Amino acid sequence: MASCAALRALAALLWVAAAYPVVFRARPVQALAANWGTRALHPLPGDITVRLLRDNGFDKVKLFEADPPALRALGHSGIQVMLGLPNELLGPVAASVNAAEQWVLQNVSTYVSKYGVDIRYVAVGNEPFLKSYKGKFEAATLPAVQNVQAALVKAGLARQVHVTVPLNADVYESLDGKPSSGDFRPDIAGLMVSLVRFLLDNGGVLTINIYPFLSLYADSNFPMDYAFFPSPGAPPSQASVQDGNVLYTNVFDANYDTLIAALEKHGLGAIPVVVGEIGWPTDGDKNANAVNAQRFNQGLFDRIIAGKGTPRRPQMPDVYVFALLDEDNKSFFQAANQQKAACNFNNLSTIVTTDPSQGTCRFEIMIDTGRHELTGKSAAGRVAASSPWSAVLALGLAGLVATAW
Image (cartoon, rainbow, N blue to C red; front, side):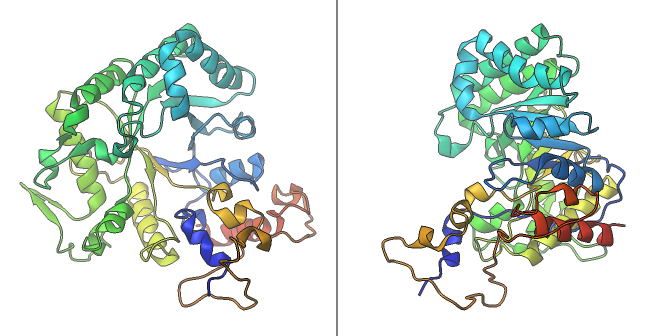
């Protein structure tokens, strides 16, 4: 007998910001950045989101698309922005410099000059060379990057705003498992060299998305402790990789350095490489839970605070954690406002009146649709009392104040 809530696991893995421990002072933390996804049907107000960023030490944020409310809220906030140009626009922008100029005018120039948004990067596409796309965006990506760069130059923004391309970690590989053997995927090796060379020549950076969780998700025999950062003083994982004089004790370091080795092989080792996405889900898989998410994120944040990078890049790069907020437009039940009729599925499901949660598998109400009275002059208090975020927000902000160092 399936509950309606149980069906939410079919929609997508949930990458929940609530699992991230709040450990930062209000001052910005070097290298700490966040992804702000805007595919939400019950969006947190922009000014509240900006406050959450600033209160927790984030001074950089990545938007996957030019969302007007988010961009306006970021104006004069002191937060640097990486702004995404979605994959579906790669073709039109690659085919026309005028299309690139119009996009830059509407989504970059306007928000920089009119609203004071500190846009530093345009992320052209999102993982366009992903294997599962089967080459769909390969031909358009570099021309789109070139046209966006030309548009930034024409707009007089090229010194402030640079181009990048967020890539999935499947664009490189190591045949023997050692980072030093890293090289680009053979089918896109030439394209990668041309792309990175253009970014390097024009002051851009390379952005890479690394999810150690996916190693566990893809291989049930993958050593679990190798997916996490080792605790101080703990013995290295038995799965650690010896690469010459370097011992790799976790998959993040090995993965990142595999890319660096690939870049160095092609004379591109000078390109800055930022981590565009990294995080751990709390639902949708046996290893996706709040305990593991906290363990991974705490280890990551400890590394960021310490400024500790990898063996090949000792200084920690900018790291955009995924994600600041849940996007309820990605899990079905929340997108339907948690209405029971949405989960009928031709009578294949049934409504239950008792909580089906068992152990660590929790089925919680994700949207509070009740009415709550809020008082005070805080940002939280300005949320409309009928907003489904109101009560959750008040508790969340109180928790931030109570637990922050």
